[in-house]
Image (cartoon, rainbow, N blue to C red):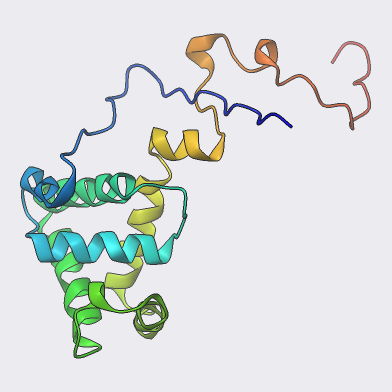
Length: 168
């Protein structure tokens, strides 16, 4: 049995490409606001909130780079991320990023009613799932307008719906 190739994902070419990050711990050098501890804690939190085995660490890191960009523009947002890290690190005698997954999940559940948790949770959704590498991994082809739309690209293959009446 041959494996079906994944479709190529496209983002509107007017949008900037994904941020290129160095591999390993040097990736934090691109950050403007967060130190390494805050950044790595946020990466672990993002992966704990939205775990996908097939996604590489770099997509979670790019999510945190986007957090850092927001924090650089809005001091209140920077404070919210700092508060989140303080809350999750203060829950146990071991830093959050060193905990096992089950302890991390329990620590996040304990603070899920806080504004800091909602900031991290909602901002992670916004930036993680807007990454073209994530789209590619999930088989989502992305934007189509600059490619002529979906209909002429194989998306007119619904065989389980009745044909529309003439004139529609």
